[in-house]
Length: 578
Ligand code: DGT
Ligand code: CA
Ligand code: CA
Ligand code: ZN
View 1 (cartoon, rainbow, N blue to C red):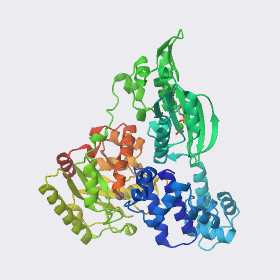
View 2: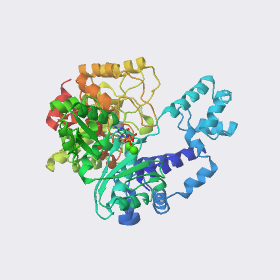
View 3: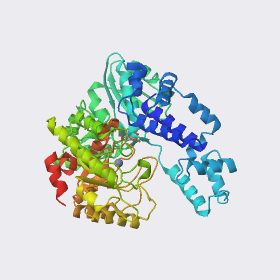
View 4: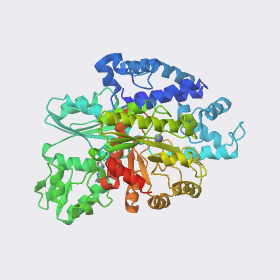
């Protein structure tokens, strides 16, 4: 099983336990284990394969009992405890939890009182008016449930990109063993780094296509072979993800790669352009009017045949990239090495799992110059947010740690910072004296999401007007597939941010990716800097910066548009300018 599937089992155990009214501490530890498994860059499977149980020790958030379950899942493909819980609590109840406005307590009550086990039954009960008489419910909550069901149904059947990453890697390693295989490239929305993907498309080249097909359908995660041909096949995985594969001719690999990378809109625009030039582009190559073959081995060659420079996959959404490529004015792709530090990192002081020193050590290993410690403020009680006394002590600890780094001649600096809560009335959750002493202030909304657009915009604008905010954290609050963004007028927020020299965060946590690509384009247009941060709660999350970088690329951002591409000295000047 891949990390994301193991995580899913842990999340389900947590939900099921909660539905049963189980011990909150255990619920939380399973949920935490799920989070850790999901965010881990290394595959649990390979950690276990390489070092046995020892390979799984020392992962924060994974205790003895969750480790045993991971081993059980890796060895048997399932978890007995999970199955037991599913026998007690119908699996449809897990679906019901996805309806917004229905938490575990309410779901359990509806189940007990009305025997509701599935979303369809819930919908029926709500539309028959059976819900509003239950204790703790009313007319309004019944309507909310109906709306929640509607929203859930309209949400597309898409997977988070991060969910598909371990599968893509696993298939690549699996197919690598086919004798004579040359290229193995995931294409489609995956290669374009879309935040969610519908299915995985893998392209290969190999003289022996049937051998590729045969091994492909035998991957241990395959639940069902949907179709199997000589050069293309489709399978459905146990995790519900569909995977398509094709074997392409070496000669037309570039044309095929371009075609199956998409997007469809990009392909259509490209074909139209070719037509105007008297050429025809297909998945097999570029052809002249007389049918003779003009190009196709590489993508560069295909683009060049229609007078364009190569377009990075992240830009292939038909948002002006063809025109830019024609003029040679495509954005210079942001590179991993452009990122000089992480400006949103949590430690054990609030809800992180490591100390500042450990987080800094991991950041140094990534080659960074700096890292900002941004623990929560006191309003975020569940995250053990810091009050004035604790953040004052933390600032002192940072100073001492920096002094130690200087003595050791290390070129790394920890910034004294906070992720201060923007309260419902738009005030900040630390007093001015504290905010003034910090090197950097990230400010975010963590509660009171249900406001009108006008109220939420006013709340955030008021916060920015304090002049203390360097970075507005996860500006829309969305959680992919879980929580819609809150209503906020980002144009107004950006206008205010520009005035006060406030950057907007692109939160790289794979569930957030907030700002999204379109928001990044808007920020660039408005002249507002974007900070690409990870919101790491563990050393294992720092690598998520990769997701942020690619979303930024999809949003046409360049090095100059991103705050944390600045070396330390320049960064500090930017932060001081307010
Ligand atoms: P997804 O899987 O829904 O996240 O999105 P994609 O972009 O991966 O789409 P998918 O898997 O249906 O097809 C992969 C690529 O193949 C797609 O990006 C473009 C190309 N393609 C598929 N169907 C068509 C089509 O009817 N016309 C054109 N021009 N291209 C297509
Ligand atoms: Ca696809
Ligand atoms: Ca596909
Ligand atoms: Zn945070």
